[in-house]
Image (cartoon, rainbow, N blue to C red; front, side, top):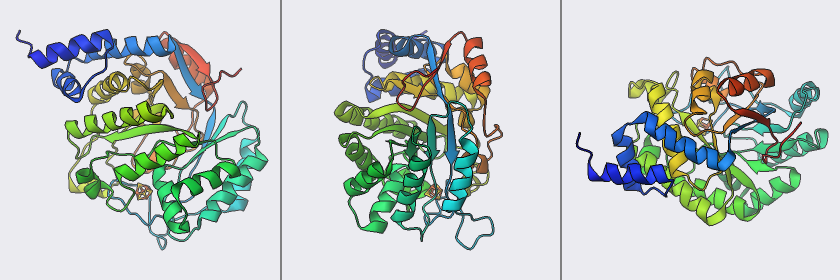
Length: 363
Ligand code: SF4
């Protein structure tokens, strides 16, 4: 069999755990040797976290689905006059907080929402303050850079000011969503009104410099090219070299159901092969990230479990209730128990570690 020289070089570098260039990553993608990719990614995972697989007891809250952005990729959002629109107020949050007070070992509240056209920045600040006051030992991981850019525009405050105000209110870390694919060609089609790729990266740079950690993500399997996926990962790696502020990387395969984008381009959900290939490639390219999450709600539990052998070392969390991905057709349950997460980790031959938002062990 003739192996193209680029592929041979890339395979050797992946085997040795050396830094991959864009050309290497494209060669490995083309090579399509999933089991070797998985093995090399697994070697990197073992060096970083041995046989540990992390998860957190967390609860998701989606404050509103009313959005001014109307991205074609989205199945969650609606306009303010839509009958399915909702917005949680402080009294709703109070009920949620009272309900979740009894959740054993709860470590984190995760808040992500649509870009409500009329809710001022103060609304979000008050909610963060209220949750922090009610659940003082719980870490708040909230808002994507897309939301932060929106707060900045709405309030006429700089990104830095917005982040400082949220941090004083009780925000502990930022979410990694909204990155999609940084390519402006793609963003013009899939999410033309929301923050640009550069704005997303700039929010993260500013947050990291203020000491606010975050996650990072990619959304793949729509109209992007493989090259655009690799460029995206390399931009994340460059920022991580600069700030060291990313904690973990998540992959979101695009769920086309109920989306304008899915309909227009007749898109289907990518295959499990592609998911595992992306997990492995991401682990190898993002050599300066400590953790790669297999986000089971997006990937499904069986694929997330398999991903543990392809470089992932984190199954995210118990979640509780999730609306955004389920709007786009996810059939997974909204929540999962620690018992079930432990079981699937042990079954795959790994050691489950329940942790907090900063990977400190619990229990
Ligand atoms: S992806 Fe986010 S910003 Fe875009 S429409 Fe949906 S909720 Fe709004």
